[in-house]
Amino acid sequence: MTESRKKFFDARPESVGQAREFASQVLDGWGLRDRAEDIRLCLSELATNAILHGTAPGHGFLVRLDSGDDVVRLEVHDSRRRRPVVREPDAMDLSGRGLALVAALSDGWGVEDRAVVGKVVWSCFKTTGAGASTAEQRPRSPRC
Image (cartoon, rainbow, N blue to C red; front, top):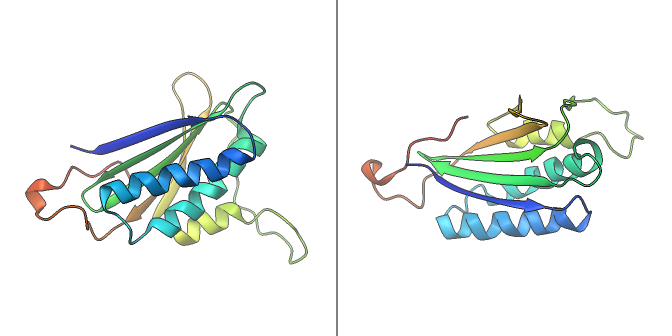
């Protein structure tokens, strides 16, 4: 069985920090600390993108974390179908490096359309499984 936690956030700049804190609490509760900084940094980038490009007026975004079988899957759900694109910004550009960072820090990432409206941008992270002592106790792997 996969462990799963999710939380909704308003589309406000301070929600990025709140989402990082949510992830820290969840990962600590699962005993998964080995990739926590990578996950938090990727969450910051995906949440910022959701706020800037992915949320329609009056909508927020949902963060979901799934853990199982030595993998953590991070999802950020938003309300627009516009798909993000990895850019190669010029040295002087002040933004545009977020998805390249997600690609570099995660073990995989992608975008899926949601059933009704919007999309899910996800990334996955292999872990050492510090929270599980035997293979029989480990939940099944989240989609990654």
